[in-house]
Length: 544
Image 1 (tube, one colour):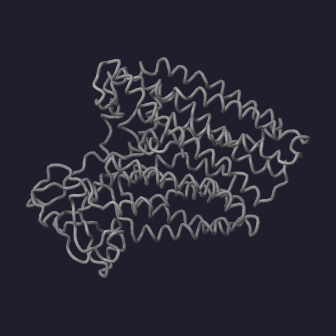
Image 2: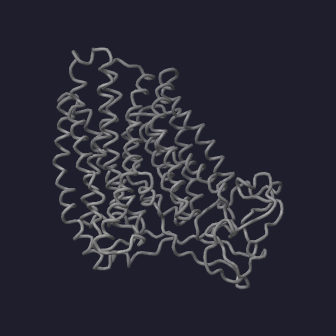
Image 3: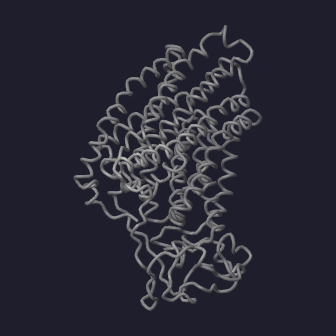
């Protein structure tokens, strides 16, 4: 939801130590070979999509390339795009489920700790396994929700449904990381992100139409049918990509790791598998992995970023979940029209994350050029985000856009409530566009702030991207759950205008946090680097 690439980089699981599973008589391979040099022949009916051939490929291990180099991954470009499309569609369900049925307090509360749960499981049992189990739980929950007899059952199983499917966003990023080189990943991330972004706009419209012309249970029936279709596609076509289990695509897959389509002889043998290789085994599940993200709260600079972005995210969520009730009472809209009301917020989400993602990339390049010029380095010198120089102005490069974005957010949230407070204004023709404009600005700036801080956190802790993303989700969702729980009570007690004005003042209370980080964040980062950067990791089990 936030930036195009940086939030995905933060989701990566560590695949830097993949043990060899090739039998002893197969000569070792020295380095990565470009994809274009890896060829195979005579693809079968679905070969270009899922990697099946009717004839054994040539140029593979044991097929004429003894002593030659292997590619990072053996899937072709079209096959990679197919897998990206599958995981992209699977990743739309968290946003679709949360936005199609608003308010979603239970969804917000349930997703808080889901990323901490699913991340280590995906490392231990594989990406495909977690996809399958997640969708099975999601489908069962949707069935119960379709026939829920009372609100208590609805609340509990809506939470289970949300927690079950929360893994698919991060899993999609992990699959992309498993199968593609860094030079390929940008386009894959952007495509996957785009699929999810547009569901933010479409989901409330679909939910409003279904609720208005059928009933609210039709929403869950719709999600049930869609999730069953997605699970069928995953079962048939998605292979395991965990590099400890599948290697670079040449290791044989067995059991749940193997897509069902590979078991049908009519489609031929898998195009990439070397029959002389041994099956891979995922590393054991370590209990320490579940609490690893929480340890990041000990880092001062990361904690400041989490608190500020968490407050902004919570306020934006409060605006979103209060929209249906406010616009129904103020403007008398039915369910179908209420679905349309969420379009500006969805468009703001897309605009804010996309624009800020591009600006963050440009700001980093500008800071890199200035740093190289100041230190008399050749312009061709590469500065990697994963190993920045100690005195690189990272905090300034990332936070330079924050003041203007925060000012727009505070002004928008402060005036938003008053646009819904006075009947003399709300009864005017076309006045509804005014609060909708503020909703667009609130969504755009909130997502821009979250993009800034998630990118900064990723840069501050590049070797623990999965942990930084997980703790970001926890802090934001805990803040949001508290905010959503009280916003309706405040609106009924105080009125909508003063409530959102007070939320603008709350943001001002948090403003000193990024100011402190601007001036002292670099010192904290250098102190951490001088102490060995990630000392507490030394006692951690190695993750793949």
